[in-house]
Length: 200
Image 1 (cartoon, rainbow, N blue to C red):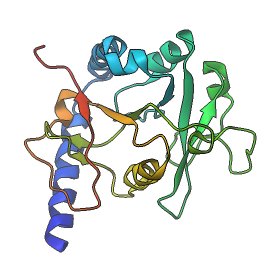
Image 2 (image 1 turned 180 degrees about the horizontal axis):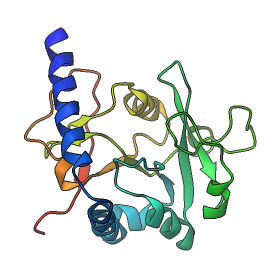
Image 3 (image 1 turned 135 degrees about the vertical axis):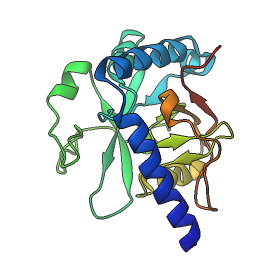
């Protein structure tokens, strides 16, 4: 276990270093390429209820994706992370403008306030068709290197128990986040697909 933890930590440092070397313009360019790939993806086109992460500076920017979700009349859910635990809910976002009203967390991510009970929670109101996954690193076998908190792994386990079943999962990545192979254990949930700029 300790060896696995150490391997993950070393890989996190390596991927962070690679992403930190990218210019803002290059991150924007790759984000647009990945977004366009997603917009053509059959699973995205057919999904009605979608969970979208609000991106941090070292992640594929999801701004265009959020706009597109609302433009196509889909229902959008965003993460609400609970501090001091690995519990996360996906709460309904009503519009792009709605996002601008959300408070900022200590990680500088917008999310619904602690006492905001007005929003539908995805698993309580019909489940999800698709989850767009953030992460630090990914490989071509569906393995994902998270930030070590376990929010998404725990949430996907809850999805598994939902009557609707597990949603399709697509990770969004910069090329620099792709790794040969990610070390995983039994708690790490595999993702269905990773979208990044490749030769296709």
